[in-house]
Image (cartoon, rainbow, N blue to C red; front, side):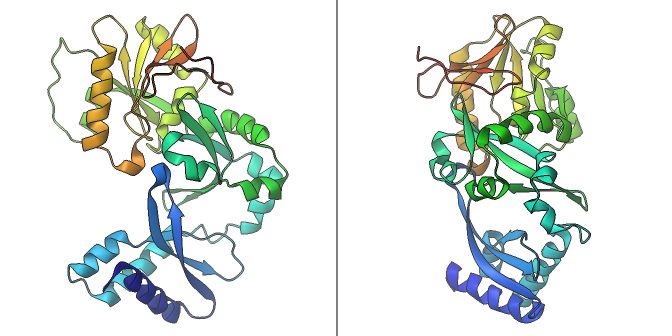
Length: 315
């Protein structure tokens, strides 16, 4: 059975099980870095928001011999666990005042998301793009959000600038940042790795949710305070959309070596959907700005910390 046939069959099975109070549809989502996933949306009558459950892994399981009824039951379980809290009033999403307090931003690669950036409000940040979401709350420990699209701006009567300014204010509050050593990160993940004393110190910066943590790069006080605490400028390695690796610029590291490492890790260790950039960044204490120390395109850009970043002249 082909993938599309499988998805259609699962959709029909789910529609029969859920009954007339729910609608089940096939949805093809354009995700980060132009990755597309086909999924199923189960929507309860009267609701304008529903989770999308992607079919890729289920199709693989089916091809490996998993029973169809088991797959359908598993999808229903996932839907039940990931739908918004039953007490949530979806009408609130239409209320600009309610939305303003929940706007946040995340960073994605601009070149790899040309198609998506035509559908959503965004703002350039060096070789990246700032895009926005609405924090919908947490249910059973899951962070729930909705990506803001152009039609949402029209519905709320908001401009991209208004959304951006509020998101820059809200995001550090909704997703507080944290920095730890690489050793602490590995230990928390139950990974035992001995780091030589002479190695360049490595730190990991993300948010407490470990979700879209690269956005912490633009938090107003994080990089400035950390750089002053260690007494050097900082190289920033874009480990993924979820976290950044910070290295002190103490003269021991070579920017091109770091850039080669970024390429190798992105190409071999990071899922395509989670790649942030192939560029190396550097934070300067004196200027208070982030620059592209070794840019993918060879062009030089800078970003201000804690404010709406602007592109500057080419080097």
